[in-house]
Image (cartoon, rainbow, N blue to C red; front, side):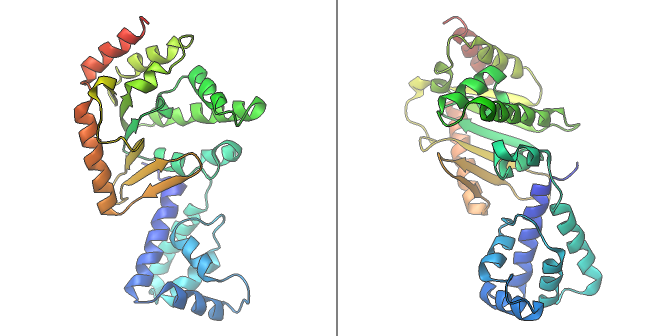
Length: 283
């Protein structure tokens, strides 16, 4: 499997943080030493090192990585591997051309290389399962975009579906709150039909969480759990109105796996969910 620049960025950031911690250095100490060794009065700061260790840089300088490897006393014979990873992390994924519609594209970068995607959606059909008409109606309903901007966002959302054209497509398991399906406009029956058809694919599982199940483990909102091939750690993605949150600590991931397992157990079986979808088509 090819590796996304997003995964490379996160891997490099994790390795740099591990190197610093293994040397017993604080971020403040490393930032000060880097500033002194670089001979540049500007360009090195604590905030810069923090961005490097969180994979939040815009463009990576190989000289900066070389300097950190020197500070961490990484043997010369091992440095090339880090620098090659840095070069790969600087590459652009397809989502870079949709920067106007996707922002940093961090989520789709992770999504594009996931081995499995488990999502619970309380308010809308998951993006990877949306039809173009539904996506357009939903994005337009936000009241924040129109015209060409709306077209670009819809195009980007549809492009994400190419993840299923990989030689090894991810396993997608979606639990959808029935309330989200009842919000599908009657004039867009194609969305429900699409879910019925998608659920027939071997790598896609769809379960409906009926409204009459009442309170459940994921009342706090939607979530996505992304698993990757070894050695990449899993990531939990949470989206709010104006921010995105990525959780990686094992305890955090375990917490959301536990919640997801409970929600999945509360939902209808795959077969019963398919029947519920067909019933919704008769509204």
